[in-house]
Image (cartoon, rainbow, N blue to C red):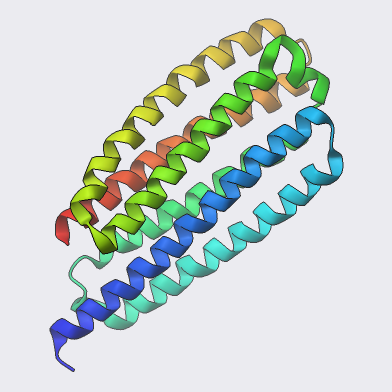
Length: 217
């Protein structure tokens, strides 16, 4: 088997693992949305189940990241853009960690605090934008194997969502400082909202990495 064919096979395998990674964090983001709704309703059992699923998904994404690192190391210099592929895998791994972190903080808040001053609506909007952003990343991952130029077009949607989350994040933080008297709940909400903002920033980084990969296809 000649070098060019080895590189093509290695790249296909790496892209398949990246797609698997991004699909798992999309499912995890949907669990975050379910958790948020369950928390507002006071459904502790469903909240706990969501946390367990997200923890399991985070571990699965870490394993996939290790797999892609091993595979890229084995092929070595045969893969021209191996650094870009690895960078993308590590960023996606970071996103999974952000999702678990946000979920943990929300799960430790009191439902009454979240319902106060319509924070339940604010959180649902923010988490909804997270799901939308990761869905766009999932589309970018699929496009890399089918139609790379399309991935570049989708990147604009990710950037638009990142800006919307940034604006909403600032508004919620200001409102929380004015409306929440409990220091504990204020810190938990602030950390959760800032975690969402940081997560979407990571999604923007992943989008940039996908764009770089698309340009090299």
